[in-house]
Image 1 (cartoon, each protein chain N blue to C red):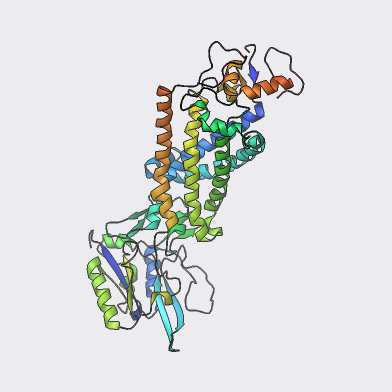
Image 2 (spheres, each protein chain N blue to C red):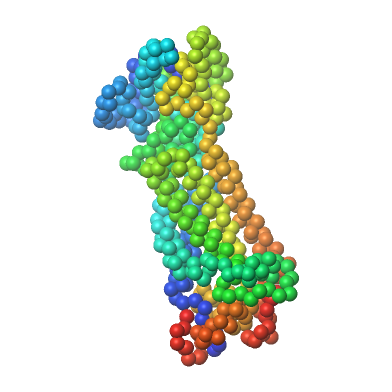
Length: 268
Length: 220
């Protein structure tokens, strides 16, 4: 897997919500389990946390025909190609790796939380104790060692697989076609293509916390692609303009012979 | 002190001005350090980019105080345009850009200075509000927080560009201006050039403070 653009395929229809991936993630990344509260769901903890980078979302869904379906979706970083978090990160802590994934150099993170606002999937989480954000890096250290990410390694049903980007996208479409009905592929069509792709059993709108058309927010584009370069251009323009003014029009000086009186009107 | 110099600012005004100026400069420089990866080295000079974040945030608190006094102190004199002479002044750009035979006489502040004051006041407030939301983004809805960043950048763009205009016209672009903000005393010739209307009004009211002369009652 050396320097190959990879995709992690999550086939939600094969997931049994054993949460082995959740545990494996914590184990490999040495993230502690923290005391939690039972909110009447197997979904636990209730949301992603600074120490929980992947989470199986449990959802009871009644379809149009009145049939109850229990939907499981493994949530976590989607590893966007056009990653809003990388775009806003001031320190370079978040960066694109050669695998196409979004890595995190935690030692560079300054805890500004800009990525939290920018992320269209609401993934990065802030850890107050260290004043840093944390998120899934698709087990970069394991990819570099030619190993599967911990979540995939632990998955007993084959819901999680990893491979070359194009192959995995093809597999995803083949699987969705085989499933038929509302089954669809989610991820390859937006934010430049994500490096985590779902095969969803239901339409995307059905799933909790899953944006239907995720994009890099317009505000972030205006900020980083327009105003950021413009700020330096404007300042440079003013500097150049001032210099030009100085050497052409010249500075505004008092007339030498004037000491009060009514002269000196009109400036230069 | 040289005889005949005229006092145009008091110590309080100068302290407020420089408090705002210095905090604003620190904020611009540290802000650049976070905005551009190529300026990350500014953080290195401060120990780390995380230290720079703290310098930026706490300089912001200092800026809030300075901005408060700046607006309270100057909005009456510099925040209100007096028509029609200010409009006439603006129509001929105060004679700064092309030759003008007769520029309307300027009072305490010319419309250019007023625009600069208003830009700093309005965008200063924008910087404070957006900056505070950016400091505590988790306390606000994400849709709101997202728009704070471009607004903060817009405020930076405006203030940073205006800063260089201010720097030029306060120094080599208009010789004799800088002492107004250092010692507070300027020459009569400079005042006749820059603020003749104010000079005449002050003289008329007998409020002018001139070095070497006895202080008149109710001086500046």
